Amino acid sequence: GLSRIPTRRVFSVTNVLIALLAGSLASQLARALAQAGFIESWTSPLWDSNALLSQDSALGTFMHALVGYDAQPSAAQLGSYLAALAVIYGGTRLLRPSAPAR
Image (cartoon, rainbow, N blue to C red):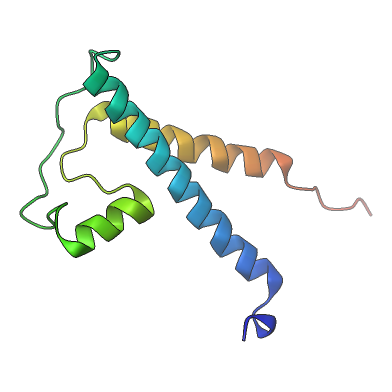
């Protein structure tokens, strides 16, 4: 079945999933640094989405593992998540082969 899917599409999807995983790791690192006391600013929760999706539910646990879902993210977590995505996006744009000159 995978042989029928265009290779470019498969790699595009896997690149997005890897980028989301990297953002999740950056967010969790920010949370761990804040809990350890290394980060003092931007550590208060921005919102609480436990009413919509509890982090302890099956779906919340799955989303946490897949994309780093946190019901009460801090600004440091959100910033590091977005920064990781921006760096990956910028890096892939810079390293993309240019079109051949005619």
